[in-house]
Image (cartoon, rainbow, N blue to C red):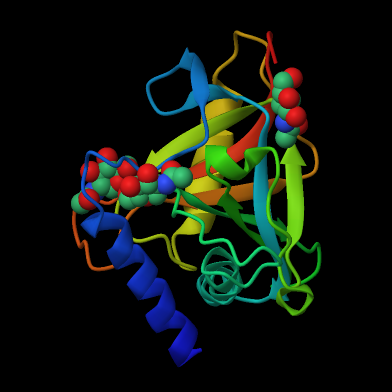
Length: 205
Ligand SMILES: *[C@@H]1O[C@H](CO)[C@@H](O)[C@H](O)[C@H]1NC(C)=O
Ligand SMILES: *[C@@H]1O[C@H](CO)[C@@H](O)[C@H](O)[C@H]1NC(C)=O
Ligand SMILES: *[C@@H]1O[C@H](CO)[C@@H](O)[C@H](O)[C@H]1NC(C)=O
C-alpha cells in the first residue's frame, strides 16, 4: 500500500512537470448538452488499458490499480514500450447490492500512437484491453480530492440533476456503473478537477 501510494503520488507529480507545449493526451469528445450543473459529452471510440479489482475502498483500489498500470506504461509489456502519460485516470465503480464490496476498474487512456496497436501487458499485471465504442457520458465536475467519503454524494447529485432535467431525452444507463475521473497531481491542494461519469443514452449517441 505504502509503495503504491508513493508511486501514484509520483505519477501525479509527473503529470504536472511535463512542459505545457507537450500537452498530455486525453480522450476526445464533443459536448452534446451543456446544463448548469452537468454536461453530456459524446466521446469518440477509444482504447484503454484497464486494471480490474475487487475492494472496499475507492481510494485504495485506485492506487493499487494504478500501480499495475504504471508498470505497464513503464515497459512491463511485451514490446518493452515506454508509453506517455495521459489524463484523466478513470476509476469505474460497480457497487454490489449487498454491503460495501465493489468491483473497480482503473482505466488508462492509451495515447494516439498506441490506440490501434497497444503493446501487450505482462500477464501477471492482470490488465485488460478495453475497446470502447463511441458513447454519451453525463459528467458532473467537482473540486478537491476524490475520496471514499465524498464520491457517493457526487454520484447522487449527478443522478438528481439528470432526474430534474426533464427535456432532451436523457436515458440513464441501468447498469449503475459510475466512474470517477481524476485529472491532477496529488500535491495540488487547490484548483483540482475531478468528474463523476455516468453512461447515458441521448439523441445522437
Ligand atoms: C511523449 O511525451 C514527450 C514529452 O512530453 C514528447 O516529447 C513526445 O513527443 C511524446 N511522444 C509521443 C509518441 O507522443
Ligand atoms: C474507432 O473507429 C475507427 C474508425 O472507424 C477504427 O479504425 C478504430 O479501430 C476504432 N477503434 C476502436 C477502439 O474501436
Ligand atoms: C487540474 O487539471 C485540469 C484539467 O487538466 C486543469 O485545467 C487544471 O489547471 C489542473 N489544476 C492544477 C492545479 O494543476
